[in-house]
Amino acid sequence: MNALPRLVLTVGEPAGIGPDICLQLATHPLSASVLLLGDIHCLRSRALQLGLPVRLQEWQEGDDWPAIEAGTLRVLHLPLTHPCRVGHLDPANAPAVLNGLDKALALLQAGLADALVTAPVHKGIINDAGIPFTGHTEYLAAACGQNEVVMLLAGRGLRVALATTHLSLADVPAAITRSSLESTLRILHAALIQDFALAAPRILVAGLNPHAGEGGHLGQEEIEVISPVIQSLQKEEMRISGPWPADTLFTPRLLEDADAVLAMYHDQGLPVLKYHAFGEAVNITLGLPIVRTSVDHGTALDVAGSGRAQGESLLHALEAAAEIVRNRRSRNA
Ligand SMILES: NC(=O)C1=CN([C@@H]2O[C@H](COP(=O)(O)OP(=O)(O)OC[C@H]3O[C@@H](n4cnc5c(N)ncnc54)[C@H](O)[C@@H]3O)[C@@H](O)[C@H]2O)C=CC1
Ligand SMILES: NCC(=O)COP(=O)(O)O
Image 1 (cartoon, rainbow, N blue to C red):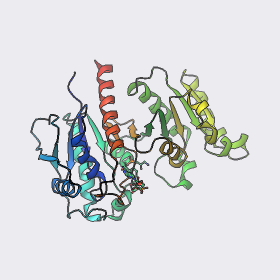
Image 2 (cartoon, protein in one colour):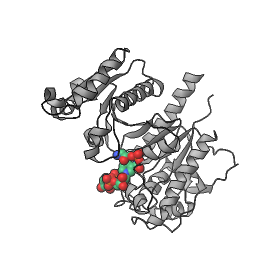
Image 3 (cartoon, protein in one colour):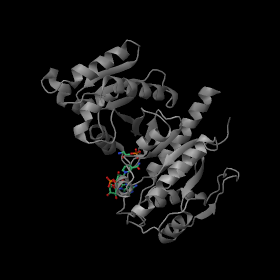
Image 4 (spheres, rainbow, N blue to C red):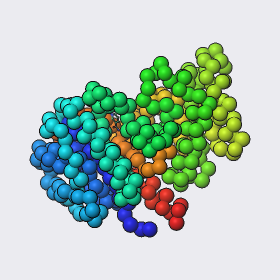
């Protein structure tokens, strides 16, 4: 099947830079066709504010999937509860933000789209609205009935996956069990083969504690949890090594022989990735029944509507989703 990948793109938090970076797409050549999900009035008003000459056309369910047309974006209009004020969060709009995700999932599950790309949401304001929410990753996992998914960020040749995602640092050690770690590594390994077309992926696994526990003197998790899982997967011929001390794992000599790193927690892996490639990296959720990619940044309320929002990460996220769709199609052909 050679048809262009069909991507649904959620606008995310309307007060942030989601609308800005989505509107910028109208001026970029894309290798996939995109349907925006958001409030068309909010998008029109942001386009005016930014002085962007974008034609926004409403797309209705039942219409043909939009073709690529320079300068035009198709929008499935999902109304906000309150008019959006740029840079000002409003909890009343949180249900509409989540409705965008639900609608996108419904289109994917009905086979009407091939992949989901998400612009950033503001996790705090969704919680302030009384809706428990830790991130797209966990929300989509729950909506798809998946217990285990993996967050991977990739940019400028570095791929960093996380053994745990959005939870308090104090809760991290207990969340890393032999079973959860094995499942994370299996999902990561399978995705590197299926979605990144790597025949025999090499994964470096970080330790949890300084110096990977210093032989048990700085923590037991490496001995009791991480090493046994690595050893058991190595018996299946998986090229997985570690636990490596996280401070020296992220050095060029080790990284040049690796396809991905598994960090134990959010702020062990992502600062390194963002230092290396912020603005160009892509966040990919592995282990879902759908393809989902996202940007490497947040809602950037301070630059929304100013013309200073950088849209490169979104372009990379769209290209990554399209590439994964193409890789899966060719594997299934
Ligand atoms: N995929 C998603 O939905 C994500 C959502 N978030 C959420 O975003 C909210 C704000 O998070 P922060 O930690 O403040 O990070 P942030 O990424 O929104 O902002 C950090 C700094 O980088 C700048 N920045 C970020 N992206 C930019 C871009 N594309 N162009 C120009 N400048 C940019 C901002 O202006 C700010 O100074 C939080 O609620 C967080 O949970 C954060 C990361 C990903
Ligand atoms: N730091 C990454 C991040 O917060 C993205 O989370 P998600 O919304 O993609 O789950």
